[in-house]
Length: 103
Image 1 (spheres, rainbow, N blue to C red):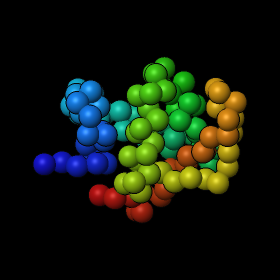
Image 2 (image 1 turned 180 degrees about the horizontal axis):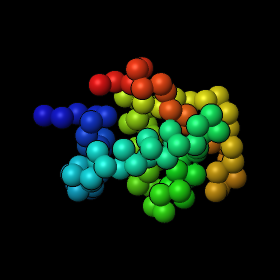
Image 3 (image 1 turned 135 degrees about the vertical axis):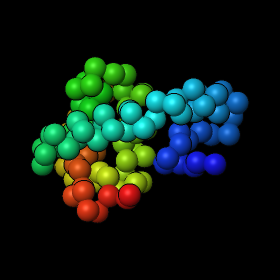
């Protein structure tokens, strides 16, 4: 059985588990899309909101992917912060060198 971050996380509540099950077939594609957007941004990096905007997707579909990619070592917190759509500071993600990412 696959587990987080290779499978969507959930909170052990029926609705959360159903949402995770529904997302599972798309997870790899969404992670690859988010990674590519962040990698393409270079040292400038992207917040989760910025990734979602670039991909023309809902933030709620993308933000969890940044947590999964971080856990896999594919992206990292740059230390930079930019305001997100709510006006709060958000982590700016940058890609890690390919040799440091989990295989």
